[in-house]
Length: 535
Image (cartoon, rainbow, N blue to C red; front, side, top):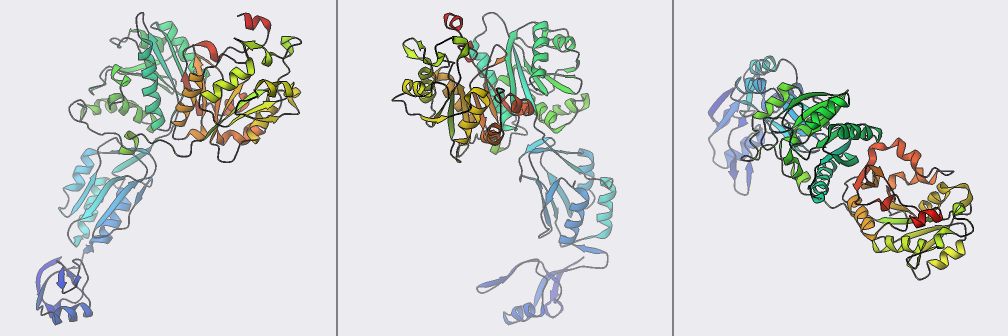
């Protein structure tokens, strides 16, 4: 490329190197000068300009940038159209960016006019984030330089983008005597927040004694509940391969690949697997929402990157996280967004025939001086359910009378004798179109508390994809009632029949479950007989 001052008469077709101001207007740098431009410049008194002119074998900046970007970048990203020699590369979806450090460096030493910069290795990015930029600095570069870049890259993409694939997770915590329950609750809350931000569901959460047999049994139960990845947070840090948590993995038929991570905080992490299912022993720092080595490992798992020794050893570079906040989470993920348009209605099923109670309708039996069905309805209203639908059937008039004065509305299920499914369908069909979720409760569970209702509504509403999730309370490893269904399941719920409730739908969507740990067995206590009331 030729570059330098040239008489104005010889500048047509050349590239203007520096902007020229002409009164109220200007001719921008990089402009390929036309005859009209030359006339304007001559009228302004210009006699020469600094210009660039391509020679044989040169490639202009935009063409060079476009060609290199197409050949150096993988198909799973979005490229901008070259402008002023620059192509920006953007993420398509949430994922991590990876590159070969040596190849990237080799590309950047070929020619000083060709630069490729990208975010850090294994950086987590959101959809639309810029992950790299390719810039041709001069107005052209030799064709030979482009060829040399391709040789240095090995004719393959120098950058990789791995989209994260959501998985249903289980959390197993171990406890020892004297351990505060608030620690377990706080760990579950932080873990759920981490997973929700990554689009993953916590489908199973339980705490067990700090014993390898108990942990192994919990792993088996979590897999039965649909977990495809398991997190184990021990009451005591893992200090040896023969310790409780790694021993439990082996007892469960798994393999412990590595104990220890060259990242701080996060040193005391265990990487293991049972078949293809990852099992991560969480370091103690994972109880905190602050960035730590566990976050990096979690991203690799969701990106489908095997947790090989070389992979984990590479985390040593930039791994001193306490001092340098390297590879932080994207701002969109750190700043928790409150979802818009969350409108959760309630459905109380009160249509059953109460056969096991004998001649009395159990829903009308007093519990501490209040009809059972009224206690259940009052808890839902006081827990934050403003639109509460009560589905009636057997003894409909008496049930309505028991709820007199409460702000509820009634829907009658004429087919109540065929089972619960029809009542669920009737309740769902009565909801307005704007409702984004429905908390379905049973009228024969009078010990469900206001606090539980409020916690379920609050926890479900925090989910970014709340409309596609199913929230369950869990106590002692067992799921209970009520159940909060996102609106994407409404059509399926309306199509139910018989007495199966939503179990069939749940079985097909185990990965949509949002597990909410509860403190007592009220979520399991329904009243079917006089003996149940006595208990």
